[in-house]
Image (cartoon, rainbow, N blue to C red):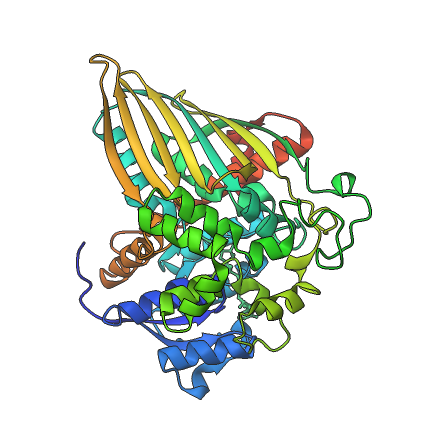
Length: 479
Ligand SMILES: NC(=O)c1ccc[n+]([C@@H]2O[C@H](COP(=O)([O-])OP(=O)(O)OC[C@H]3O[C@@H](n4cnc5c(N)ncnc54)[C@H](O)[C@@H]3O)[C@@H](O)[C@H]2O)c1
């Protein structure tokens, strides 16, 4: 990794989960590389916390991007980390003001918005990177490298799965921010622009034809248990057996325990057992050991968003009693069968690329663990990859010799930065392009990213209108 030669300055728009804990965290850990000099965030507690952590003076703290971008340009980069439907306007305005922009995915929630942004990048000549972090992980760059070295021969087919875990599906796409198309975006865009981007990148050619199927099969009123209340904690008759009973997820942190159990590491299994079966002992030990306090009173994702919804996000109380109280009214406390969700819970996308390679993406929200799996069949070898939170592995099966070789292996680590290391690697790479005065465009620049977004919109049109989309015709919409 090339060292950046100077500290780059930046403004932060939206200090939520991504803004605060990914980009904010990066600047705190690597102060020689990135310094935030202004913040726009309407939630006071978040704004004040970000300002305090990054030593931002009061006159550089704003309650909205509109106010911040009224000022003259304050830094080299604008990080835009607002929700999906609030990407277009701040990005256009920031580019017009002369900022280089690191924009969260999806680029925009509409096709027109994506195109407008790409055109503005061209017009202003500024650098824009989209946060397609997976391209920057060691896992996916190892696969790209294997393809480029010809280890698989000619690629013929890629079969890729985005296996969303049962609880992540419920948390984000049934109860949470991405549950409804009107207030966020279609699931295939919100969740899978990453995956479509990977398929496009790995195949190395444009998609020619796309078709897609999918629906919301499980999280709807038809499956609501008899006499179930709107909120889990209002006396649900099946609270003992329901997979999605909210206290099970946010207080007993069963998903986190399952992750530790699946890691294969003795230490993690020990912690899982302590949390699950010896709560009283853990409670006692947690009074003096920080790590155990974190395990006992879980505050990170998926618990953190429960607190961000509170009117004054000031409570630091992560006790079981307080969480129980929050779940009585929080969107995350709702019965998963009685929410206002309408995004699909499973969808498949079939693609034929210009170079005749075929690919398919299966996305579903019912996985036993969170992660992506893929299989690439080539004329010389087959590659099988498992990219799970609990661990990652890539195996190459050579046709001629009949041998297999593990070319990448990584276990769960509490230190690794988000998205398998991709979050921080993406920021590193983006900062390098800024130091180089944008001479090398980011790997996930506006034009590259536009293609995966086009694929997502095409897939959605195919699913809804039951037709095969010819991408050349679909692309003419861009002009
Ligand atoms: N790259 C990835 O892998 C990845 C992962 C998760 C989320 N995301 C994307 O990142 C974006 C942010 O997601 P998040 O989970 O951090 O959301 P979040 O809701 O936690 O954060 C968004 C923040 O924007 C703030 N905001 C609202 N209006 C604003 C305004 N007018 N001016 C300034 N700030 C304003 C909100 O108060 C909130 O704090 C979304 O588009 C999401 O899809 C990307």
